Length: 135
Length: 135
Image (cartoon, rainbow over all chains, first blue to last red; front, top):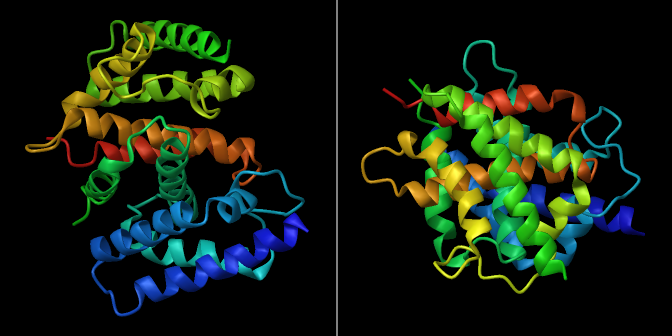
């Protein structure tokens, strides 16, 4: 049951991320667009978000056997992050790192460790530093 | 009770972070040192880590009223992150952003969404991108 909810949630998130990237060609703007949509999704649907990424579920994440919806959601993040990978950096691992940063921002707000009010500002800083080395 | 555990955990983490930074003057090395020690602490002591940063506890985080141990742990991260703040960037918010990235890395490993084996590599990528704009 939780497995089905997690997969369905990933499909919804993938669709929102895809829409966020549509027509955005600038790398920094694309990274910002997926970052905003991802964190907004997590804040708007906390129970679904936990089923997707916090609760233990029997799903093979980060493998070729992952359900299509999981690979699609990750693929949308990957498309935004990939142009930022420097020579020798593995785009998949860089995407996981950006994903983890977004996840940390939303979960620390949820647990009351980070004030909600500065969220947009933190997201801007994350993106500024992630893209700082870009040519 | 949980409150006392969280405060004690922050005191222990602060001491470990302080030791990690001792004698390290290079900015990137300092950021890497606190990143490694922070994530190692979270992985080694998952229940304590959850009491500190995941479970809801009646503690005033991110305010001047926070217990000294919380401010000390945050202060150690701040000392490592502060040199990276660009003109106009608020060091405290940048520190919260780096903290969130570390938190996301450890919690997504805990929930099985990110494979443990690439942790060191992800941490390197995070630090490389956080410091990329540095002069």
